[in-house]
Image (cartoon, rainbow, N blue to C red; front, side):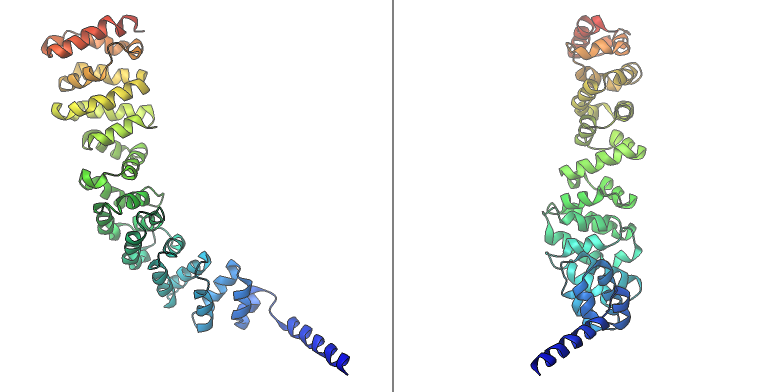
Length: 336
């Protein structure tokens, strides 16, 4: 009798198992929350998200998987179809230091609906700074377009979040409006290595930013652009504009970055420095300070050496005349 009963139980269990869902689609159709939660694949979590619109048990199963990125992907999908639980789950996660960057990762960049989450994202940046995880939230803010402009400016104004905000501005999805905020704030609000890097990266890609660096940016940004890995044609273009348009007092701070550019891009800078010496008298002091009279660079700068012989030196200060004469007597002797 006991053997028969045991066999009957095994048969019943097998039959019950055979009646269970075989696929995510089948489990979703049957509303089998437990099967989907146990299965746990991205498609199963997405199915739980759809069921959560009507089934509290499905929402509870999602909330129990708080460290699963797919939960927040499902929550955003709920936002897209207008389900109330989606924004709630995302906002709760953004307010949690342990989950905020995970939730932010799931948010699409550049979507107009991000405006609803801007306060939560900003508070998250404040909460996570100076951790590098704050940059993930800042990147979402930077992608939100004009509605995020004031948020970007506030985070740049706060020394605790400035670096994170500039990390966000360096992201591929950062909008032109967000990046323009970085150029519009006072120089003190760009005083962070990440902000300097952000401007230099922008100047590499955009002519209007390169022109702004040349004519309006603080000398530190010019120095960073000249001394980094900016392509030599863009370095030359930057200094051509700077030497032609910056007033003489401002150019006093440009001798050091110009000297670095001459060392790194000697041949190309020969055109720039010779042109400045011949056509922009206000830039001559800067150029003469930047040229190393005893350096090997002058050997590859025949146009600059020719400009030094053009007869305008008499109007310069004794110190600058001496530097020019040393350059002609030394480095320029072997110019080719």
